Image 1 (cartoon, chains in turn red, orange):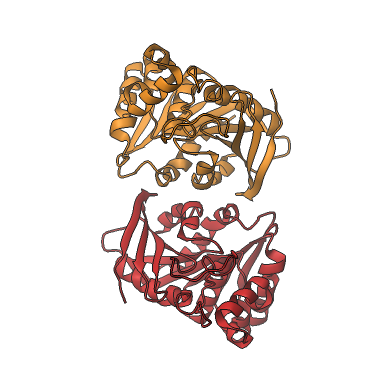
Image 2 (cartoon, rainbow over the protein chains, first blue to last red):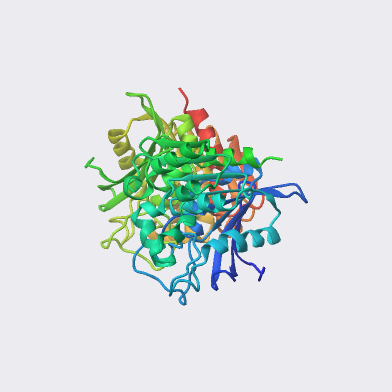
Length: 281
Length: 281
């Protein structure tokens, strides 16, 4: 695996360094860009790592600029990693829609053409990115947490559910909880994985739980004024699945909040606190 | 004065509402856009108002998205107002440079052509905007603070110095402290006000202090890695002016910080705390 990183930018902030980096990805066969915040820390220390997966249309930049995570990560001494949401570049196939193709990788390994060559975001986030982080940053990979927003909440939940024990903590803002049951999911999984719905179940948090996957706990915030709640997000299906499985999830319906970073930034510090508690020691 | 506001957007955030509004401005003769955060508050309460003036190239959006002020304003119950940095629109004259014309109003009342008709940002920020805020929001205008970044730090300092007693608190991030002594200032003031440097002194914080203007105190943060420090910002001139005048300013050189919102957001909560203390009761 090519571990060479190119530094796009670094800025001192909240006592640490917010960096943006790019590299040639083996998983996607493209250049990939991601951001990493490393808080101030003692020489030789290794810090827990919190990975944040973004939603449709986003790059690493949205949460990096608007997520308001740095104060909390500096307080707890947590590295914060934010990858892109799809492969990028002129060689990558695309779709005119905002919810398929570039900016909409859905954290799957595509098997259908023309997507299979580059849309390998599951492999990228599960394998390549953690190896890069371990190699290039003062990261204690035994203490990882994962979180995400919307499509990235789907990514965080499904990646954590498929890799028991890897993440000490899992949380999401307004996640897509059941791609099998919503238009965004049906479109993306049909396109990337094909028509056989049995193959979709490993990319559906509710189906994974129904099929036996477990997490020790889970934190989810969902705004009640989120325009995607009813048709796409369907938080109640996750509530039903965790209840049936006996997973002690904390799923909070937040009155009046929408789907934007104004919502995410409001609860970000609480999520980081919650991850920090589970990543200690 | 036309007090009709049009709401561009509102989002619930940090328990309050982040709004963006536009209106026909009498001062600039154009449409103007600004943002206001109103924290959660008791019915019938009137809250102190903190106005933030942005730097070159910015609109209201930069600090609204990247300033990380809402948590602190929510904690203290402070309204946060962020205007644009110049008139906008096809009818407004412009210059190809980033430091003159649109995005670079310098908080002056222009007297030179073709700028005089629209570039009346001093009048806009000093007179029209406060009246709009008072009329349309639960604002206690007896408790105001003002702050800004770079060109907006210049705006905050000069507006506060020219209006003794109006602002209970004044602070700045990386302000232009002496437009008379730097290329940005010379270019802008020559263009907007004309060649007579005597007329510039009311737009120069150091000159205003030399000429007798006073503030009870002052908070300034300046990054030592700020690429504009030496040629444009010249913080030491402000230190010299406040020392000579006996103004107990707290001017902090922040090691390794640059000119970006990564710097501003790091110290924003401390600035809001500092304003809150002075705007109490």
